[in-house]
Structures are given as structure tokens and as C-alpha cells.
Amino acid sequence: MMQYYTTAQPDRERVLFYYDELVNAGVQPSSHTYNLLMLAYGTIEPVDLKAMEKVFSILRKKTWGETTVQGLHYATLINCHGAVARGSFRVSSSSSFLSHTHTHSLTFFSPSFAFSDLEKALEVFNSIALTYPITKKGMKTLPDAVCWEAILNVILVHKRFDLFEKYIQKMQESGTPSTTYIQNVLIKAYAAEGKIEKAREIFDAMEIPRMGEFLVSFLLPSSFSLPRAKACTDADTHNVAVLQVSLLLTDTTAKRTRRV
Image 1 (cartoon, one colour):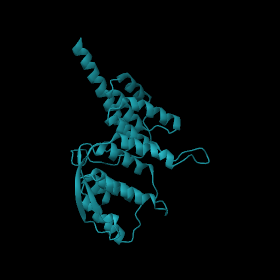
Image 2 (cartoon, rainbow, N blue to C red):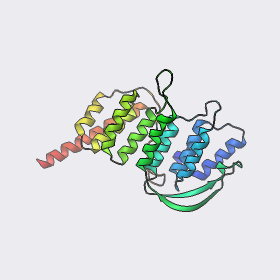
Image 3 (cartoon, rainbow, N blue to C red):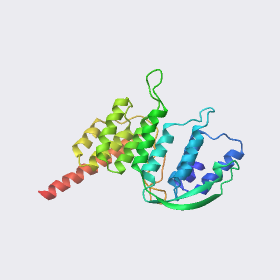
Image 4 (cartoon, rainbow, N blue to C red):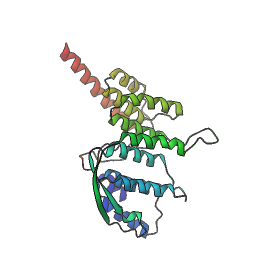
């Protein structure tokens, strides 16, 4: 229910209500629960980035079981700071989720305008490597592919193509394997920059992949008209890429024809 009221029918009051019900029933909040709370504050209007950060701070202090910080939590921070908050109205809030009573009443004060912040998104992303050093096996658990997708997506939203190439190189140097979702972002970026042949090159190298995890790319606050978030497979994303490249090539051909 928390997920339903975060993605399908955005309503932060209902998200917090069902969080209260979960806690009152003696159910231990999971890593996914905390991500939903972060999304409820970071994507549902009025966006409250401070409350989102507090939820993340609480999660970082958890040590039991599988309730740990994951790449998806950092991706949420990156997307919400770098893309979701663009031009949205932000308020500071005092939420009882952050207290010990677990009631979901909200008190808002100190209104301000929050704009998507590329520098903040980059700061969050760059902090991951400092927080999660190289393991004994010489591997990094974070940033993972989901984190890389998030930061590349934010860079694309801001049309900072100079940074795009830089972070692609960093990702390759880190040894993080590319995913269909990352490749989809690359196609959109190169197409937006006018490098249609480069976009086509990436597309031609893609294969119809196996089932995988889906990271919702949060580009706008929930008050905007967006397709409902849904479970998705890598094959679905591949099909989207097929459509995007086809449209891009058709548009490019049409423009060339008009010039002739």
C-alpha cells in the first residue's frame, strides 16, 4: 500500500498512514520501506528534501538484518535532488515519522522554492565512493549500476554533455557493467546532443537482455502528468530504445529531406 500511494496514486498522507500501521503491527521496516518513505518526501508535492534526508540518515544508523543502505537509496537521493525538485515548491516539515510517536500528522513552515540541484546530486554521488571503500577483494559494492544510471540521468536532464562523457569514462574505469537502462540513457543523451550515429551505434550493440530490476527514473514531481510507474523488464526497456532510435532516425531523415 505504501508503494501504491507513492507511485500509482501519490498521496504522502496515505503513505505515512500505512507506515504507522506497519510499525503498530510490529513489522520491522525494510530497506524498501525506507526507500518508499524517501520517495514520498522527495517526489510527492510539496517536495520536502530535508525530510527525505532525515529518513536516509535514520536508515544509515540501522544495523539489523537486511535493512541496510543500498544503491537504490542513493539513486533516490540523486534523482530527487538533481531532477525531481526542478521548479517545485518546497516546504520544511515536522513529521511525526521522525519522532517516536509514529503518528503521521504534518506541520509545515518556512516555505521556499526548491530547484533541481546538479551540484548537490554530484556531491551525493561522489560521496558514495568515500563511504564505501574498496573491499579486500578489490571490489566496490557501491556505487552500483543503479547509482550510475541515476547520475547519468540527472546530467542528461541538465544537458551537461561535457560532464556526461567524463562520468561515462569513470563508470567504465570502475568496472561497473553497463545495463540496458544505462544504455537507454546514453542513447537519449547522444540523440539530444545531435550525435545520432553514436546513439545508433549503442543501439546496434544492444542485445535483448534477460529479466532484470527496474529503476524508475524520477524526472518530475508527482503533480505533473506522468505514466504510472510499473514493474518492468530489461526487454521492455530494450523495446523503448528501439522506438526511440526509430523515431530519431525518422526525424533526422525528414529534416535532411526538407533541407534538400
